[in-house]
Length: 384
Image 1 (cartoon, rainbow, N blue to C red):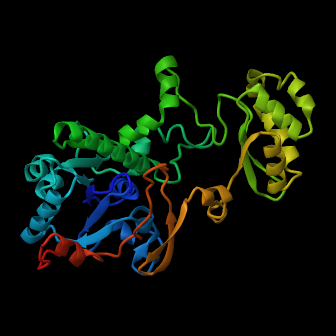
Image 2: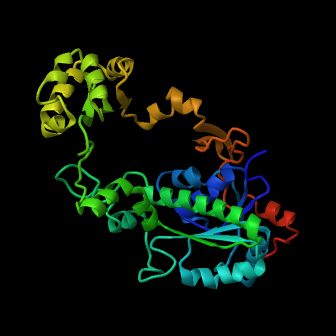
């Protein structure tokens, strides 16, 4: 048994945040049907591809079946209404006018299915002065100050590498859907769940916004370091590879000094307290860099881990997906994709009694249209 077995999810979203929310629900056992237009989700055409599939699409769309519907036709919208009646949760990321036009606004879906939970993701919010504006992850990073606090010290504002706004919103939307399922057990009714990228990005900046609200200070860009304690940085080892280490108190700094065979550093007036280490951060980074520069990365890690230093390798993806802890955590799963064997990331939430799983590979466009409609006693006809 999986936690969400018996829960039906209609993924009527595209791009990243909405589909990834549906994927997370699928990982925990829900049956997910993804509705795509005849041309497919736009992410099928993003970036490098193998055949008709892009890495972007397969990365966020496992554990789903794909149904193609042409929602510009009356028949397509009729079939969509049948799927809404089947669903416990409907996920979309449409702008308000498009949501109403396609019959996915809450007033319409709740009339079809009073128990349905409608989960809508947007860039800026369901209403308000920016509602309905086109948006995307880096725009949300820019608006929320996330970009302003990210980047090299003294350098330009920089977006995060992965789409952190989309990923955060997807997780919050899944949490909202689960909370609404719990509420439905009590009330018998569904409800509307709204999550925006900007709200999610403000949520994850709590340590920095806490400083702002308490002290009125803007967090500066600090690159790979931080202004709270030192050392905290990425250091280049003798073989050109990097480690990132942090010492947030005197204990861990003492462990680092022992690992570097420089116990005297812990008594040095420049480094004897966190305040002193912050004041002499550049000198400290130079000393640490010189010592680690005499070791290969593996030698440095072995020595630092043995001394109980908070440290880790700066890995590329080849290293990430052969890392023994990543593999032990089940975060690499091989699936039987229609193009051949395909690895995907595993389920990040571990439940002891009702664990989730990756049961389906990312679907081909419309791969399951006939199958799903037959299960609902709907003739495929001209719906697609």
